Length: 76
Image (cartoon, rainbow, N blue to C red; front, side):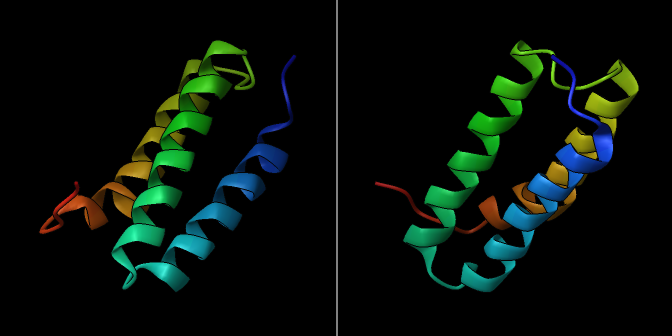
């Protein structure tokens, strides 16, 4: 089942916005990051992306909007 890319992008960008708001709270940010990573993996496995190009675009967005906050954090 493919969701139209704009709808899928909106869901991710909503999560990215939430992450931006909680980025100073390490625990909340970490939980949200994990949620985004899991969603991305599930969406790939469930063929939610229309094309490999869409997967690549979202991966780049995740790298620039989510992974950048992984630096200088300590997780238990």
